Image 1 (cartoon, helix red, strand yellow):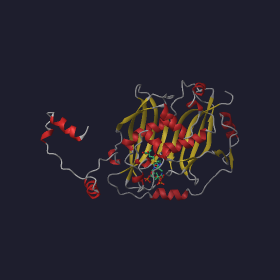
Image 2: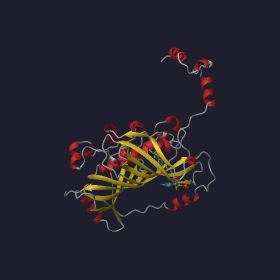
Image 3: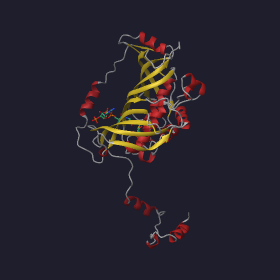
Image 4: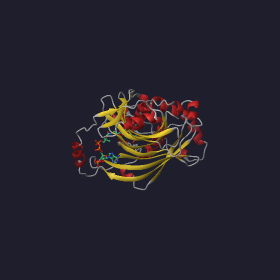
Length: 379
Ligand SMILES: CC(C)(COP(=O)(O)OP(=O)(O)OC[C@H]1O[C@@H](n2cnc3c(N)ncnc32)[C@H](O)[C@@H]1OP(=O)(O)O)[C@@H](O)C(=O)NCCC(=O)NCCSC(=O)C[C@](C)(O)C(=O)O
């Protein structure tokens, strides 16, 4: 509707608006006028400060999303998660799925993405996540995701007085059935409205210095293949503390506009860290950075390409050690911690891994443990 026709239609109604004086025209295209206006007006802020969270608060996150095949495939293709069971009907059927399901990494990223507007859009660091579980899987395309979070704890940051530390328990549910599909506990640093006096985190700094000396086993063993039996055999050869089953994966994925900005936005993650270069130029990273879930999913994709994954069970002790930005390359390193023949199917065994994502300078950027069911060669 043009401005002229809007005025005509207003005079046709009985709203009383015709009695208001016509607003004074302002030339917004004059740069000085506009710059002055921007200085004087209030900004409608987004996100919550640390002080807005109290233990026990329950937040229902408004933006839900429908888990689509497009979203799943975009995520999986770009993070090099190319397991055929998530792409082809015949491969899905062989693994007991009705059709290619929604991948747990995309489900986790979408569950977290939806929460950002309420929990962490104000900024701050993604410190860690644990107890990531998928009680309602397999999940299929078309499922509508509803997400809620409860504040588990709030704490002062000794090292960063301008931040507080908040932990939430988040649950992603099927909006129709209420079944929990994904749940986890996440911890972030969240900006405070008002900085507080702290001890400067001296105790943490001292203990970091003590940990400087690397203590590596003498021998590293690589499994012969990617089946459950290969992990069992490799672990049997390292039963003293001077050996470990650990290896690196060859693939790397350089971060670009798609991985840094597009993938998080497709999960409705509104964190400016991933898409606002203007604001991030003044931040410690100096640039937009990769969504933690993209970094870890990429590293996991490299790891899965060297194993016969059956199902994902869960993830614990996940931490993000430094930023990943456009142009950085994400590689992966795996240590095998344990293998037990106690999976939910005879076709697989359970393996516990420790995965490290690292960059082109060999710096760890993510670490975490993962429990997955791995297919048996003999099945
Ligand atoms: C975070 C940085 C600055 C810390 O670097 P540092 O060396 O200072 O680390 P620290 O001294 O070990 O930890 C700082 C404080 O956090 C505490 N802490 C640490 N971990 C935990 C935990 N799990 N649970 C509870 N508390 C924890 C720790 O105890 C300490 O407390 P203090 O201040 O009182 O001394 C550094 O490691 C870094 O820059 N990491 C990268 C961070 C990052 O955000 N990466 C992901 C990309 S951003 C993202 O995806 C965003 C998302 C998803 O969209 C979105 O949250 O909205």
